[in-house]
Image (cartoon, rainbow, N blue to C red):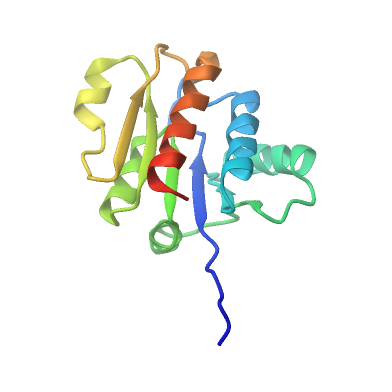
Length: 161
């Protein structure tokens, strides 16, 4: 009998719906690099149509040849988005939309929010597997890299990816 272990998949959504909810290339790279070091998971950079070229550039320039890192490609319908989300093992993101999609499937998720407490209190995911982190900034491009790194590291250890 073959002992085959199933590859885990982490969806990483660094691009939120507004220009203030977007991680910098440096933080995106750091998170992907950390996930590669701390897990054996496949990391999928979740990109919408407006960010696909930028996401592919980051992966092509920094993670070229690494078969454990990819982008989502074209997801042209709500059902394709739902299938992609439902088939992952964990999600890390900056947007409440992806957090709620993960919560629907009880997928462990780490979501970053700005220090806008009204936005957080109205939109944070309340699922059992949700880890919500409030960054001390209104703009994710200026986020404290150490705070982000520590949150990712704690999340990975908690869910044992």
